[in-house]
Image (cartoon, rainbow, N blue to C red; front, side, top):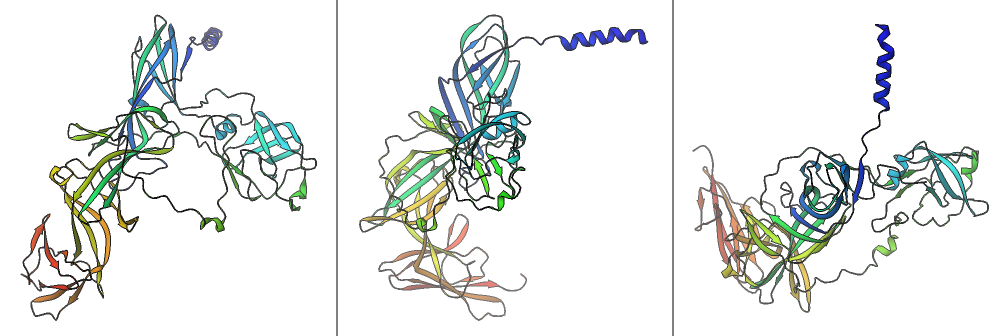
Length: 538
């Protein structure tokens, strides 16, 4: 069988040496138009979105004009969302169907450059500590980017940016495979070259939206104005300019997707050790006066950690990380401005989407990278409400207990509302002289048309209640509720008492399936309720 070995070797050599089929690469950078439809995280409940990496998602639809060459080609759609789910991407409008899709996750960043140039020569620029002049020399990156960057120079082995003087690295070129923006690559094959308009649609993680309500109680204490912001959150590194934007409200059935591989950390973490370069032996024992850092770096404590971040806008040197404000400045900051007047120029338009609700922003807006944006969503004036002070028999304690204030109305047109209210944060303001003061912050759950709407307005120290135990009998555990009202007018008090009472001294009502005691407590007066639980079996 040995006589066949030369022939097999020749065949193997020929196969290995055969060149791969040539592929033309076309880059698509310009987006003609884009539409972004946002969906809330279905598991977030009433918590606010996470601004660092929101757990909702979005449907992104881009329209682009691209050149498709003849033959086999790779078309790179640059500027897609960082959280793109490549398995959901649909490209329509190409002369031939897509044969392959790839999500290119390696982004151009300080850490990415160091990682790509490991064990390779770079240009090392530094400041001579003796003369203060800038010098240039070759260096080899031995380790990095995690845990610090270690260089080999003609002077020895040292860590980057640990001398306390300006230092930087320069690279001969951008390595292949690193992209300045998140990119989707598709492989296609066309019999002719053509310039076509295509539509790219995909789902992307790292988005979320929520409603944020502002309620202003009128001076009459009987009506309020309700305003809501639609807050859009984009946690990715890619923004979308002049986007057609809409948000979907309602409970969606979304199954968990496979964990997507994340891009490498773009931040370059530089670690210094209590030693100097190998050629300077005991130089680290000499205390040097602090010198200003180079542009793009913040050098703090000699043995601390230095983080270099990529610039978010434009190109150029890395963005410096500012040091924290001195303690003496923390208390000298100006107070925040008062809330803006309720006069929005753009208000989201509500539409039905099956059993869901769609809020469409009538004008194009920019959803910037790693940021949040607010657009007016709801604006209703002079909504009548009832102020109710509430408590529960499950609140036990020595001494009187503050009541919880609820501003109650109905979600009906006749009450000034009559529209779906998505869940979100709530801030309640009330006038005090010429100033509008914040009196409470709470959360509002999803409320459909026809539902009761209850706005939490904090606690009252003037309307209080106290539950005390009375002497029990052989068959009863006895209690008394005493409500006091320090206001100059009557106030409505409601106490949730449950439905397992054996005896009660007043007629109870029912609300949302629970027994309640509702009473008008007179001005500067009090009201009492006795109730009992049955002891023993039966």
